[in-house]
Length: 98
Image (cartoon, rainbow, N blue to C red; front, side, top):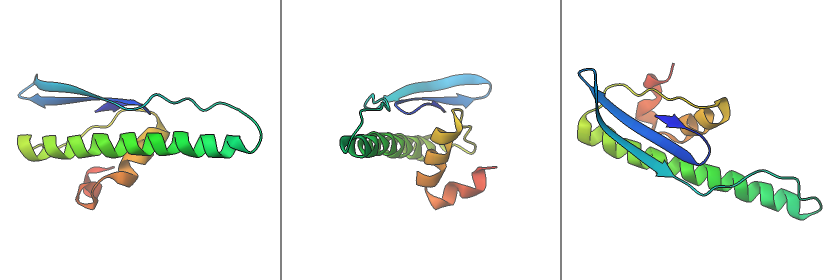
């Protein structure tokens, strides 16, 4: 899976070839400095949008893991996104993270 804060591309490989590819898009949100009392509220909303995206992608990934009997998952993305995915993944997947 290749992901950022609003898009994830999930590839399923088998016997050295791509079996399936799918894209999951979330709401596009940018962290900006708006100033004043509303800035903290805006930043929380952006953070919540990113967390919702992570949960949506994990839900779809879990379905793919079940249906295709996936044995390995490779995550690619920046550290913030990867940490969010690891924190929201099912506990039974934790041995997969190294």
